[in-house]
Length: 73
View 1 (cartoon, one colour):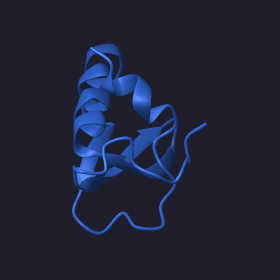
View 2 (spheres, rainbow, N blue to C red):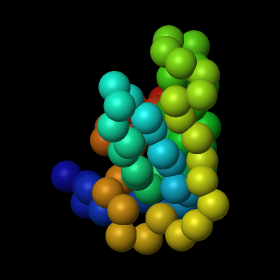
View 3 (cartoon, helix red, strand yellow):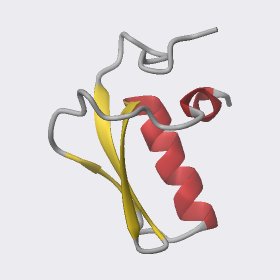
View 4 (tube, rainbow, N blue to C red):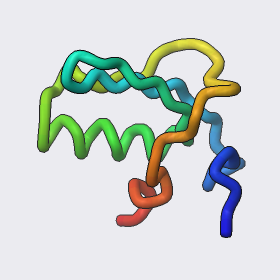
């Protein structure tokens, strides 16, 4: 089992992913590739402006749930 606080792609920088859903904001750390795939998926299925990558250090933030799923092509 993998550690939920460890990046699935440690060679990539983590980014601060912000998700606005039903009036609540959720902030996550995610590797860049998973974050971009999540944004693309969310824009196709939901609202284009509800997810963004913010500047700043994501250290200490929870990781994007099911982050590894967004790395599968």
